[in-house]
Length: 383
Ligand code: PLP
Image 1 (cartoon, rainbow, N blue to C red):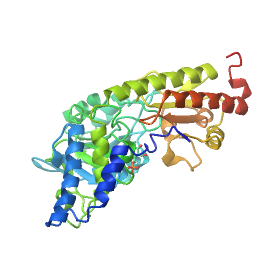
Image 2: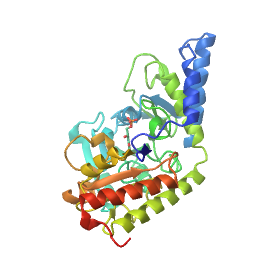
Image 3: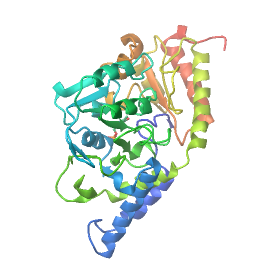
Image 4: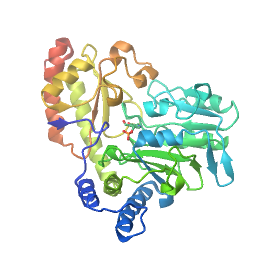
């Protein structure tokens, strides 16, 4: 099969698989003081170091969780503390294009939630942010680094500077940015960022909330044992964390890989426009992740195209995987002002470490056939 859905889950990297297999044979509980426990603890702490190095923070700032949904839920707390004591954000400001796990609002009641608008390219409206920040109080602002559906990158440093100026807290869902953008929470003035192993070539069901400094943290979501310095109770997923750490190490120097993906994406987009000259690529005019293409061809319904591609052994996505299965258009495209009819034609192709030029060529051949069948008028015949 041809896998073009890395933003949903990236295939497991061989380094992650090897680290997990080794960790599965360690019997100890990382909290046990005996030798087996210490071995398990060593695996967890080694992975913590790798994650911390990827984000330019100290190891103690990394809180392992059961995925990014949990990391987001942990961050969206109305009770935090920093070096000077407790901080109680009185409202949550989140962008209109956040992942559903942020859009749920975490532990904030709906009356304390404000939605920050985005422009037609999907970037947050900084004037609107200024107006929301001018309401006073202590906001917690949550904006993703890059969108899972369109790949559009947000102006994080500008947002973070504004939030810092009013003494607010800033959370960044950086799930799609890992390995595709430098993770620099300090430059973003971010209090905390969320990561997910399975978007980086690690396993599903493990993630992290990475604090910019271990002095700033949200109140715990899961309490009980004292794991993760009392910030996340429960015996650690040692094998999962081992795979996460190995994936983080594999991303340590990703600049060559980012350029390679940008080259593949350029080929893909050139091909899409050549096959259907009225192809629309969402977010094409702004900075986007090098691996993501969200596009639509009017009159080629995404759900039918997706099934046709699947039958030919090609995996891709319509909108986000998390919302597929639900009828209704992508909230991301709606927030960007995309009309419903066009949004129903939107497909997402997301590349990654397994992707090659041959994959792009195979997809384009298939796309000519599928688009030509679903809407014969859309395809450029002379090509
Ligand atoms: N945030 C973003 C931007 C995502 O794309 C996803 C996954 O789809 C998540 C959060 C949730 O991550 P997880 O699957 O680890 O719970």
